[in-house]
Image 1 (spheres, rainbow, N blue to C red):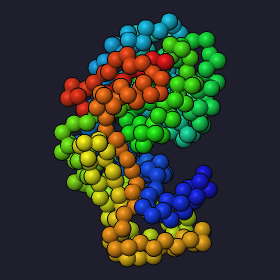
Image 2 (spheres, rainbow, N blue to C red; image 1 turned 90 degrees about the vertical axis):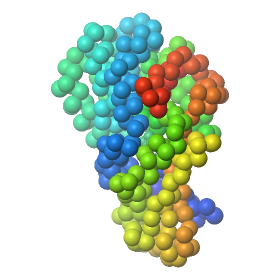
Image 3 (cartoon, rainbow, N blue to C red; image 1 turned 180 degrees about the vertical axis):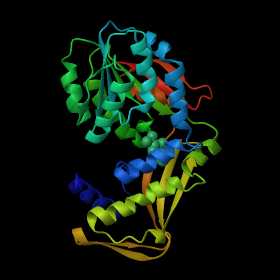
Length: 312
Ligand code: AVJ
C-alpha cells in the first residue's frame, strides 16, 4: 500500500501539472474529516441519497423484479449508514435476500456488521473484505440474481475514461439480468455545488491539507501546512468540481524516506480531486458506453442526486 502511495506521490509531484489522487484522502484522519463533511448542512449529497433510500425503498425493490432469494452486494460499504433504510425496509417486509457488504477496510466492515446485527437481527449479512472484483468474480458463479450498490456519488471521482473502465469491469463481473444501483450527483444551481465543496467552515480545506500531513507522516516529508492553502472551482458547463492545494510561497519540500525533493513556485497548484456532476444525457451515454440499459432514476425531491438503476 505504502509503496503505491510512494510511487504515485513521486510521479504526481514530478509532473508538469502537479497532482495527487483523491483516493489518498482516506487515511484514518481523512476518513474522520470526511464524516465531518457529510455532517455539514452544505454537503447535500448525503441527505439527498438518504432521502431517496428512505422514501423510495419500496419502489426500488419493486423495480428489481427479482426472484427470491437474491443478493445485494455493496461496493465500498463503509459504515453503511446510507444503505440502512433500504435494508430495514426489506427485512421488515420479510424479503429473502443476502446482504454482502464489501470494503477494503476490515475495521469499517467489522463495525458495520456489529451495528447491523444489533439493529436488524433478521438480516442475512455476509460481509467481505478486500478487492471488489475478487468478490464479484466469486459471486458471478452464484445461481441467484444480484443487485450491486455503488452509492454515495463515488463515480464522480473518476475521470470519464476511468469511469467507463470501472463500469465495464462491473459489467464483466455481472450476470445477464443482474442490476446496478449507482449514486450520481447531478448538475444543479452552481452556487449550491460551490458551497458544498468550498465550505465556509474550512472542513474541506482540512480534508485536502490532510494529504500533506499524511505525506509527512508516511513518507517523511517536511510540508509546512501553513504555507499551503486550498482552492476549488465548479465549472457548470463541464460539471467538473476541481480541488487544489496552493503553495503560498516558493518553497522546497524534502521527502526523507524517498530521497526526493520537490520545488514549488509561488502560487503553484497541486490538483487533488475531481468530483464530476452529471446531467441525464451524460448518464445515458455513460451507461450505454459501458453496456448497461438504464431502467429508472430515483431522485430526491430537489433533484440534486440520483440513484440510477441499470440492468446488465
Ligand atoms: C466521497 C467522492 C462522494 O466527491 O463529493 C467531499 C468526496 N470531496 N467533499 C465527493 C468529497 C470533497 C466525495 N465523494
